[in-house]
Length: 258
Image (tube, rainbow, N blue to C red):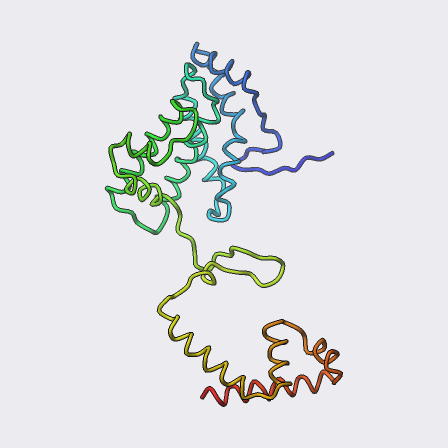
C-alpha cells in the first residue's frame, strides 16, 4: 500500500521516524556524553513535531519550506537546552520553543510593525515561558508569567498578542457547502444601528401596504427561503403568477421607500 508522500525542504515526510520516549532519553544521554551522531538522530526523530506545529500556519504562509526550516531552528534550540534532570517530556518543552520561533519569524516578516518595547517584552515573555514550562511541566498562566516578569498581566497579554498575525476581514470563517461567511460579516458597526432601525421601520410600513397575498409571498420568499415553485404549489397558482406578484410587491415597497 502506497504511503502519502509530501516533501518539505527536501524531506520526505512519509519516511520520518518517530522516536519513543525511551529512545529519546537514550539519545540525549549519548549526546551529552559526546556522541557526534546523537544530536542529528534527535533532530530526525522529532521532525514530525515540527510539521505538526507549522501545519497550523499553512493558510497564512505560502512558503512552507521556509517555515519548516524556522521550526527546525526552534527544535535545535530545544534539543540543545533540554535538561534531563527535570522530569518533563521533551515534546512538552520543545513545542512552545518551536512555536515561539515560528511566531517570531511570521511577526518579523509581517507588514504590521510593533513597537520596540512591546517586541522586547514579547521576546522576554517567551523566554521566561519556555523556562517555566521546563520547571512546571506545563504552560504557565498569564498571572504566573506577569508575577515572574514583575509586569502587569495586561501588558503580558498585549505583548503576546502582538506576535499574532493580523487576520484579513475577508478571511472565511464558516462554510457549510452554501454561502461562505467571512469575518467582516460578523463585525457590527454600532454607529449604523440607529440608521438601520429607521430603514427597518420604513420597510415594515411599506410591506404593510401590500395585499395579504403579496405579504405572504414576500415572507415565504425572503424570510422562510422558499422557491417560487414551492409557493406556487402551496397557493395553487402558476410559478409565473408568483413571479409577477413578487415583482409587483418589490416595486411597491421600493416606491414607498423613496
